[in-house]
Amino acid sequence: MNKIVISVSDIVTRLGLNLIHDGLSMSVKRGEIYGLLGGSGSGKSTLLKEMIMLVRPESGEIRLLEHNLTSITLTEIAKLQRRWGVLFQSGALYSSLTVKENIGITLREYTCLPDTLIQEIVRVKLRMVGLSDGAADLYPSQLSGGMIKRVALARALAMDPELLFLDEPTSGLDPVGAEAFDHLILELRDILGLTIVMVTHDLDSIWTVVDRFAVLGDKKVVAEGCLADVIENPHPIVQQFFKGARGKIRSQNGK
Ligand SMILES: Nc1ncnc2c1ncn2[C@@H]1O[C@H](COP(=O)(O)OP(=O)(O)OP(=O)(O)O)[C@@H](O)[C@H]1O
Image 1 (tube, rainbow, N blue to C red):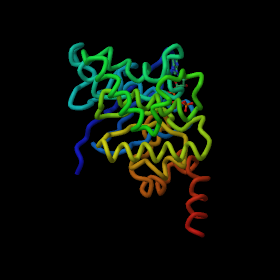
Image 2: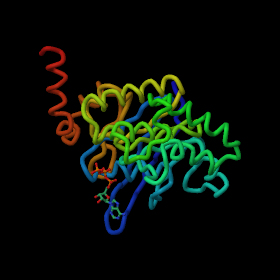
Image 3: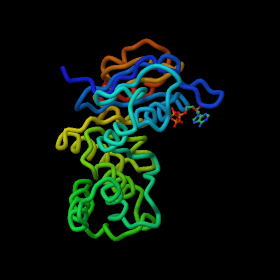
Image 4: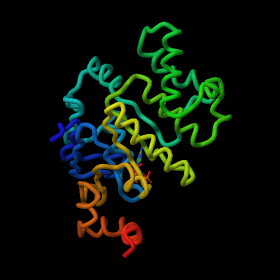
């Protein structure tokens, strides 16, 4: 069985007066694509932010790549941050920097690599996400939504991370672009051996790329597992979530 690389145990999260998580637990295994699903406001993005230490839970424990995030030192945080990449929903590219500068920025910040090598790494990452060298000198305002996601993904991969966090990677893309992006994620996981955690509302992504997932509701994980297992879970939140999707499965099966 694959080793667990992220384990969230019994966390309680409060943001302002809002209780977001109340005894939430889940775990991610090495090499899998793990989805965080749930209704709007169920705390998916907050959970992802807790895994990358942008938000701190009030209690409970998060262990990531054998570090306990509640008791980690600053030096360990700095090392750990190099081992993950993040793709935020909007892409979060710097508008005043070109594509190549956006991708190279973490390499310049975290390494002492010479400029020629950084340029070469940027070229490799661009190709890895299916973009040509011609995109390197463009600014974000000159890119389509799909290209922005790809550049943001290339930037997330710049440091050769073991873990990739994706917050709604296909949001804002048309169905064709979303499908292409899903396939890219699958391909990169297989080629690079990544472990991927993704927040998604996109049921097509769940069928296509996600190996296991958690459904968040009632401030907890109400179901966790692979699609075949979770879809049979009688919890009302799960059934509500998949009602339309189940119809889709039936129609796909010709039933
Ligand atoms: N800084 C904050 N202060 C107070 N409440 C917050 C803060 N950030 C988020 N929240 C609240 O926390 C709840 C969970 O937010 P979160 O973004 O994690 O949900 P989500 O499941 O990702 O939702 P969506 O699918 O709509 O993006 C929401 O009700 C949100 O309003």
